[in-house]
Length: 234
Image 1: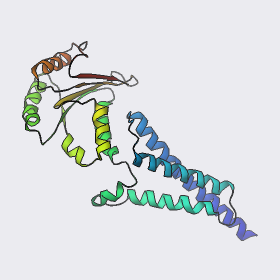
Image 2 (image 1 turned 135 degrees about the vertical axis):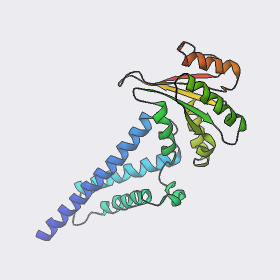
Image 3 (image 1 turned 180 degrees about the horizontal axis):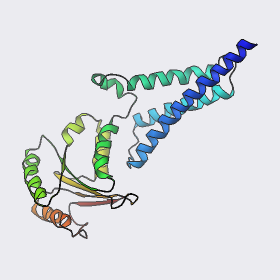
Image 4 (image 1 turned 90 degrees about the vertical axis):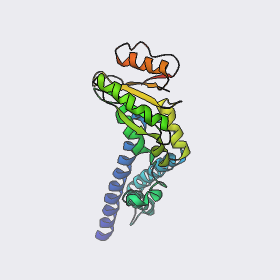
């Protein structure tokens, strides 16, 4: 009898630990997707969230309906080992990590930190390293921004595309509002708790659109419409 009780408490303890692990993973990933305005729910994202949800429910079932050793606990423990084990794989095995995790998280997060900034303004210059016109214009843009005491982040979409699937890359481009390169994304959050917004200036190497960008950065922020400009409040 004492041994049976000990086993039951062991199942309950392990089940609660596994349940908390799954709950933490599920909440953190949902928060990331929602806060960063990611609306592209591809198969990998759904697979990961689905496995996490199944594991969470089975872990809870093992706590509620446990006997000497609950069969319900085998699957969630296996999923925990699988998911955490994949996350611990070396970077050079990144292709295997992609089976479980939406790898676009790291790239999207980097852009999101610029686009959804806290108490600050950020400019990000979007270009492709296989486009010489974009690279040549970058020096001109940085020279102009230095005169206005502005700083700019350069983001190579060619390198980003190499790390993503076609669907993930399309979702990133859509989210940033890019339809012609090179482009500038301007993000701003006036106060700590105010809602951020972003303006994307497309094809800024064209003189008319570059003029609109300069007018905007120089203080005339009413110019948020017209060709090549995408305004996104959030």
